[in-house]
Image (cartoon, rainbow, N blue to C red):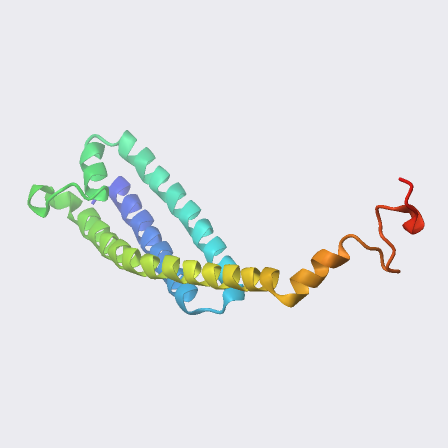
Length: 161
């Protein structure tokens, strides 16, 4: 295997590790307490940025290779195993393991989005209940008065404005 293919394989290994970490963060979103959701979501964004950089590196390497377009097809999952040249098989196998993780993540991602929407709806209901509750009505009455009970819009309860 030539040096370019070795480097691509190393980068694919790194991407695989990043995807596994991304998957863990996604599963954590599904099962964590509400206060941790944002942290896990931010971690996912960070991991995605790392993977984007890795794919850029692979693209740069492919640009410098004679048969880089074939490697790009393998990495984009548009190649059949039967059409892959023997020297590119390690790249194909690593790419396939990445695609299996991506498919698992798609399923967990749906559950994570459902969890976020559920928590959002619960919070919106709490806000609505608070806004419709007795305290909200009392606060609407209090808005027009100061702490001593005088009306804010009129100077010492005088009728002149």
